[in-house]
Image 1: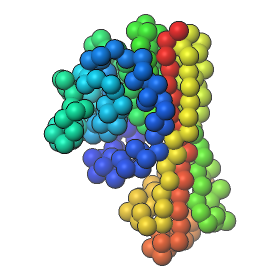
Image 2: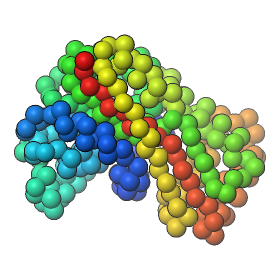
Image 3: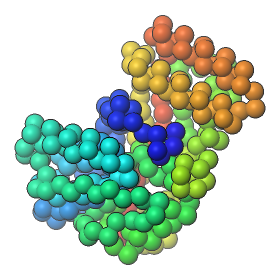
Length: 270
């Protein structure tokens, strides 16, 4: 899936799995170093899921700047954050700014006390990760990056074609998503390296999706998405079609589960 291809429906579907997977210890550690009434920036905000996850961990209500290139998603985020704030007034932001910006071209200029992002680092290029690390070094602010895929995918029970299809899927993850060739599953490790070189102290925690057999809508989407991506890089489409057919039958019979490996990363300036 390209950075242009994220639909509000997909982001809504994955949100419960995102929130369940998150490493709450890193959000708490971030909260511990922020001042009262902190201002936070959410890069590639989508529907505002990351903002709505992090805000309750903060000791004080906060200011937010949500950044995305997609005006449609910013509109969805504005509504979702407002509805969430109405249900949770104790965590409601003191102020919210929606900022449309193509992150391929530049990073925001607005000041803030911390930067967060979710499911972004594995979509961009190595050059963009370097520019992000330089930008964070200039600002000397904490950085919380959640849900970066790390290449671990486990279907249960195992199918004989799983490994072959997942290898093709991982190859697709390294293609250009609009920023240039991507590090894909290596992105979190690369970001750790870049930030430590710039004097940040960095922690990582596993944050794996766990998708049970009864979550058929999510499983169907994952089977379809895996087969579509693997079909681009696998030399034999018949193998991918066979895997897809069997896994869709497994989903329909509620006899398959899925774990997808992610890493959460927190970096604090030295």
